[in-house]
Image 1 (cartoon, rainbow over the protein chains, first blue to last red):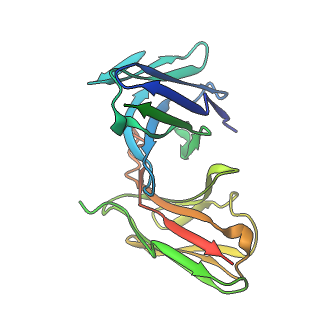
Image 2 (tube, each protein chain N blue to C red; image 1 turned 120 degrees about the vertical axis):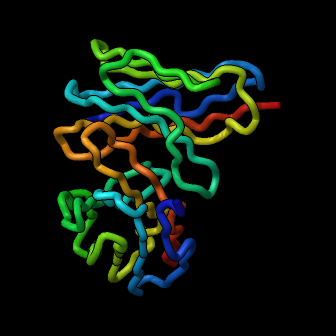
Length: 113
Length: 115
C-alpha cells in the first residue's frame, strides 16, 4: 500500500518568513495530493490540493509543487502570519484504491510574531 | 452546507463501558470515513463506506470496534468494551467520490477519554 513520509515534524519560523513542508510517497499510481491544516481542537481542513497532471498550483500565499518522477510534493507558505500556526498534513490518494487518503505524520508549524 | 456533523464532541467514560460515536455526512456525499488520531500513530483510517456499504475495514483495531451506516445520512462507530488505549480523537469524514476529485471533508471530531 501507499506510504507517505512528511518532514519536518516541527517547524518554527519568524512572522513574514517562508515555510516549506515536504512529503514523499511510495505508490507511483497515486494521482491526488491534498494538504490539510488542523488547528487546535478542530478537524483537518483542506487548504490546497494538486493532481498528478499539474506540476504546481498557487492560491494566494500558499503553493504546492509536485515532482512525479521523484515522487515528492511540497507545501510553500510565503509571508507567514501567526494565524498560519497549526499542524499541516499532506496526503496521497490513488483513484484505483477508492477514495482512501494516506496521510503523512504531520508538521507542527509555529509562526513567531 | 453544515459540513460533517459529529457527536458527542467530548466523551469521558470508564473502562468496560460501551461508547457510541455518531456522524452525519455532508448531504449527497457517497463516501464516509472514520479516522482515529493519536499522538503516537497520527491519522489512521479505520473503515470507509461507499453508498452505505462498508468497503474496507482493515483499519479497525479489533473486534471491540464496529461501524454501521444504516442510511446515507447517518453512521455510528461503536466501541464495546472500551479500554484506556482507545482514548483518541475520532474523526468522521465524507467525500463526494467523483472520479475527478477525492476531496475529503472532516468533521470536528469526537474526543474520547477512557479512564
